[in-house]
Length: 120
Image (cartoon, rainbow, N blue to C red; front, side, top):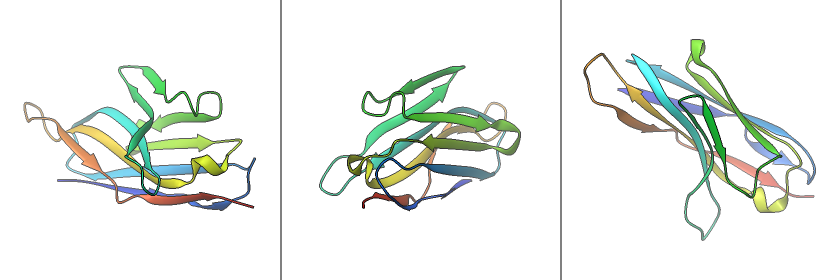
C-alpha cells in the first residue's frame, strides 16, 4: 500500500503565498505521475497541476502563479502557490500514480487533503 500525506495548508491573505507538500510512503518501486487537485465547496474536484514524463500541466486559472515540482529522492511533490486569490480557496489533494514493485500494476493514491483559505 501507498500512503500520501499533505502539509502546508492554512489561511493566507490575497496576494500571499503558500507551499504545499505531499510525501508518499509505503511500497514504492517507481512514481509515474504526481499531481495536485482541489475541491471548493459546492464544486467538483478539479486538476490544478500535474507532472509526468518530464512534462508539467497547469489549469488555466493557476498558470503563472503556481509551480509544481518534485523531490523524487524523497518521494515528495510540492506545489508553490503565489499571488493567491480568494477563488483559490479549496481543499487541496495530492495524487500519485505509483508502481509498488516491478511487474505490479500501477496504483492511484490520494492524500487526505489540506485546506487552503485565501481571505483578508
